[in-house]
Length: 300
Image 1: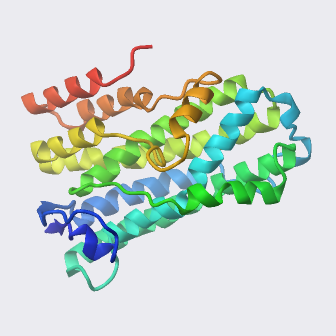
Image 2: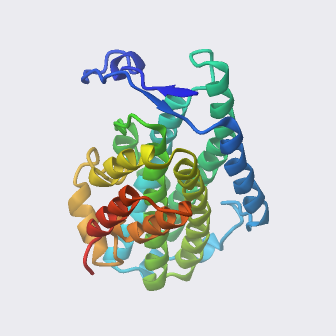
């Protein structure tokens, strides 16, 4: 079974981007993807469910207990989480569930869709909860929150990948980095209500990371060294969502790093563990990839 990367301009209509070379690469089998999806739902069934409306004591939320850096951090992560429509669109675009793919690819994509719609719903819950916190705590009023999310929300988010494993390797790092940041922001939060909310968000992100790690591991077990260069490409060019489109992103990221460490390379340690555990007999090329990922980690 093969996955075909269609030219970008045929996918996006009039977007003025260079046409990619059409390449053929191997997908996981529908059975392998179904195993990963089933494991995710089995774990999710044991997780603590929560609803934005009743999960925390919104009446007790108080942004006055936060430092300027903590307030800025809440605004920042709200913007990142709220970009879910653009992020989710990547998966419906690159893993379509229509007649543009053959029967085997459709089966794979349909099974994956079971996960992605659940994932999207949970991430959208995060966006709603963070926006609700801003309004309830007095950080901004509801109208100002919505207005602040328009420009970044309309920005086009691209991942220029040519191999399906890259979407899962990217999300693996992104989910773990977000989880780590929520934990670290919770540790310094001056508002217990925000701390409780961040606990819930970090638990969800941990489960999302587990799914992505499961899929990447499956690729390594089934396709071995074929997927190493695509994974390396993800790490070599990694950017968090909106890093290249959100105005003032890097200045904002550096500002909130003074409040709680915000560095996506903190997630690389966990990627290395996934790589090392994925196969019983690692090849020399896998060892080279592990060394490369380790070299990309920031020095604390």
